[in-house]
Image (cartoon, rainbow, N blue to C red):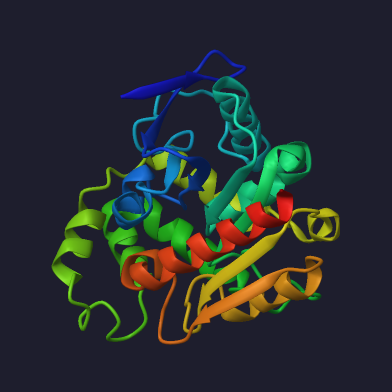
Length: 275
C-alpha cells in the first residue's frame, strides 16, 4: 500500500506500478484506481503508472469536508508535490478529466501532456450548452441513490457500455468482475460528488489549457455525450481527438489494446516535442 499526505493531513492511497516516465491516472465517479487494470498490464513495462484513489473513493475514505472539485484538485497538486512529479502525462476519465482540467493551470509547468477520456466540461445541460445530460437525469440519479445506493450504481455501471458492447467482448466476465469488486463510497460521498458534478462548469478553463491535449471518447457514450468531447477539441487549442466508434463510456476497458497504443503514441510524441 502507498499513501501520501495532503495539506489537510489526510492520508490518501495510490497505486504505483512500473518504471519510466510518469503517467498519472484519475478515475471517475464511484470508481477507484482498480479500474485501470488493463493499463497496469499494458503500460507498466514502459511507464510509471500512478493512480490515486480520489478522496472518498477506494481506499481514500478517511477524509473530511466535501468532495468538490477544488478539494480534488488540491489533493492532486499535493500528490505531485509529495512525489516530486515532473513531465507527467495527466490522464483523467469522466469526473477525473474534470479534476485534471481544474488542476491544469496550477500543474501546467509540470505536465508533458494531458489526456481527457470520456470527458465533458459540464455534466448537465444548460441554455448555452446542449452537449450534456438534462439536469433532471442528475437529479433522478440522486433520488435513486438515496433510495437504494447499490441498485442505482449497478444501473450506472450498465450505462458505461453501449448496447452489446460488453456482452460481445472476449473479457466480458473479467470486466464485470472488476467492476463488481470496486467498493462503492459511502452514500454521503456518493451524493456529494454527484452534486459537484451537477454544478461544475469547466468551460472557462478551456482557453487557458496550454499543454498538448488528447481527447479520447466512445462514439456511443451515454454518460458524457460524444458531442461534449468534440466541444473540448474545438475549445482547447491544438487538441487532438480519437473516437472509438462502437464504444460507450469506458474505452480503456473494452478497447484497452487500442487505448493503450494511443496513449503510448501520444506520450512518445509529446516527449519528443519536449526534447
